[in-house]
Length: 317
Image: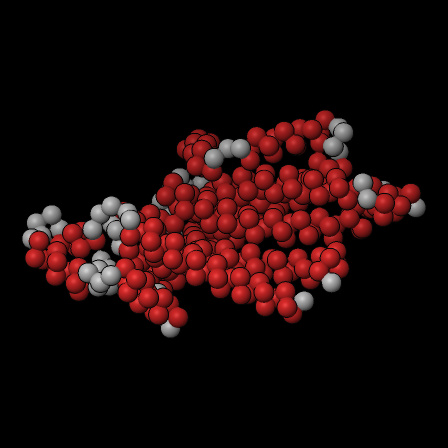
């Protein structure tokens, strides 16, 4: 087990290094010049050249990459080339919107997926089971931006239950208003991701219902529901844990889109703005942190799955 943990941590480090190189190279091949953006449309070539030199953009790409990595290793994600603010402080400020949004969406997804996924498996030969399966498949196929627009039309414009856009200027100093403004965006992501998760839970529960230990428990007098919950849930929980790593990546991607749609001042909206402004240093830091978060969660899920699943430990022995 210890060797497995060290192996996964080493792979995580390699993954972060590869991701940093890909992010750096990808941003450098994008069209546009941040020095020209800073100088403005009236900037002379000498002014643009001076700005480029002051930002270190005249250095060879390998040298720029090594400087960036050296800064990261010391905890310095760099500074915005346009505002001079540190990337870490900007991320910390914007995460106060993105992280609560993602956690709320995750909670909604789990609340939808777990009970309905198990019910769909228990009733898979009935109209209820078939209806749940078809509806979840249809919702899972809907792009999150379309789902967001539909919910805005129905619940914000039509019924007036939620604000269509925006976040309080005072932020979490007004917790009720802040939470209220995040409910509809979180519901948008949570419903779509919950439909995807529901299908995985349904498959895992159906597999558990076919196992001998669940059938034996039912033969001894337990109902199928009780036998599944008592003896089959560990396998279902393992599926939930494994899929959650993918779900969290989906939540972050969904947050980028939803923050634009609902005009929320989070990391996703900041990232889109920074890409448009060619603020390379900041975009590098933003994307690397989000990529690193997904990789760390994936590694943690792999380790947790190995701990709670005896079959994986036995196969590795």
